[in-house]
Length: 500
Image (cartoon, rainbow, N blue to C red; front, side):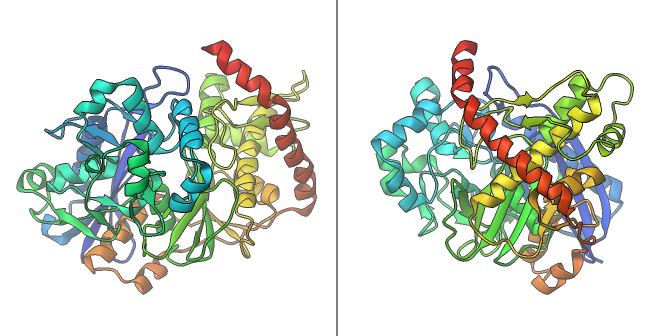
């Protein structure tokens, strides 16, 4: 039997799994850490936290498995969207913490791009807009606000590629990570855009020169890395890519026309397509499989599981603080939480809203509402956000949607997603996240797994059908979800200024 490793560097933790070539999970290990938030709407992380977590999770997984190192044939590494990428100096040492996807500080830079380059030109070349979400605007923030750090920075490298460099000594960037940086990547040619980089004053040499498919072998484990991890020197390390795309690979999405949502700390809901999708405010980048032809058209909340965790930690109390207890409370509450609407904009909002000043909001509270009402309203808020993302595509999304991530563990939440969207929801039987996608990429990259074999792995649960009465009720709440935001948008902007 042969075995494969998959490592995913997440926002709040890094997990590695080891599977055999029949799709059986053998061992796993998770290392957790925190995000640095020095100011409101700022979010950054030191890259060596990721590196040490990756090393530890791989080493412990191999140790737990008891599998002989010569039988482990490959590793793929995915990672959170690292925003600007890690700014590295000539010695490949971090210059400062990495401005991650959640960071919203680059609003002035986004406005500058729109006024000096224009949205039309930006969309023509990159198929993406201007917003603090995008890595290139975060690069411009460093350039404008930290000129010394900008001068010291010789290379920007995404989190997964930084780890790959330390494992193999090779500097590469996969297409998904490059495309997700936004305004300096030409989606038409799948290369860096000299025109856009010159217009923005970002030197070409600050970006990795070698672009690779997510299934390509980035390099082999160095002797030092192999010894520290308990693996064979030279073992192939596969490029991997953005974690939400890897989660879709884990769901078996290897072809055009499938809509899948990976919901963890944030939400990434995407249509995979080989044809242009002229949606509203979508983020677009090359997919992790067949990157030259398939694109990942996604929208999604900056916060999803994060606000539910925040609710539990803030209001759960010492008793009945588990998710199971809270879900049991929510299940007793009718659709709409008896007049509550929550806006899940706790870190501004990205696609399709694109508003750094958007605020988390609870509307409709009365003395009759309980903790259960509030918790259900938070679950519903994430479902409204998913429906927003789905409608932004402007496409017919087929017979059902795929749903993966921690949310699938909650029965009441799964039914809320079906009732709010009006689509049947299908979840995997296994706890599929980016790690399984990494294993699949490692298998395809090493030639151990085939497309046909991978399709056999994915076992899905039965469809969860929407309740028509609940869906009709949620249609009205969804209209309120939009109107509450529209009516408060100006006040939200004032709150931002007051907070400063």
